[in-house]
Length: 286
Ligand SMILES: [Zn+2]
Image 1 (cartoon, protein in one colour):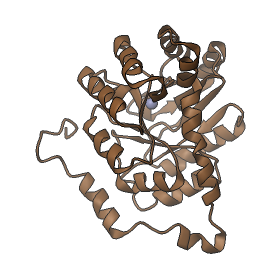
Image 2 (cartoon, helix red, strand yellow):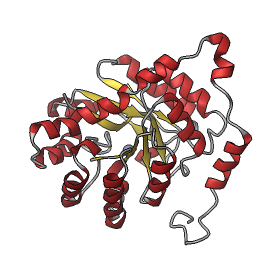
Image 3 (cartoon, helix red, strand yellow):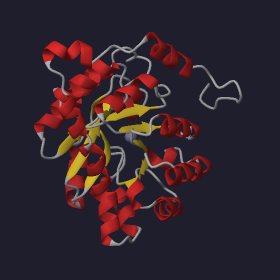
Image 4 (cartoon, protein in one colour):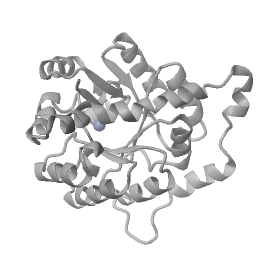
């Protein structure tokens, strides 16, 4: 069994680049099938309204439920105040199994982490090199598994990637995916130091070739038991926690009590999270 834990799908509503324009799956599926990939986790491309984008991903997932699983994309600022409602819809109507957040949109919020914890969902959060955030997430939300893709930096910032390996070693709830990692020795080091249980196979399709990305995992030359964890076992373990969320499903009459709106304090905390770090020049301020 091989599961790709990171692939985009559907249309974006921007025209900046492929990332917010479209993520067509035709070539991806042909390549993934040829590579022996059985199942793929899909989430949206960048979008100004993830409620719309998640709905499109749900349609794609429902067209091939044997082949696709969905994660709900959330924008920490645009979706503020409606995260719980979006995740309730994603879990109970779409059958989604996780959350995706990208630092390019905004820094992840407490609101999102609280909802991930309540629904027992893993969060795939692209930190764009801001690995220091992982330290806070891992310790504030030890119940939430955080998958930090690309070893912390799609832009190949090796300082960030080396720092993320340290976080992988120290925090039981921090994971990474293999997508887009070009420095093979850092990938090998991550598996060696943190263990195969902390690394998930992902392709970042359709933008990257799933067969090429899979070849990197094969090239690690892991014992079969370890390779199986990277290729499928780790993801299966993280998404099976969803069983807890299913049992939590509220009775309609009790829904308002069981699904409270977040407190003003949490909104305030989310607001503060967007304030620039006063101690250092913020590389993302530009
Ligand atoms: Zn991606």
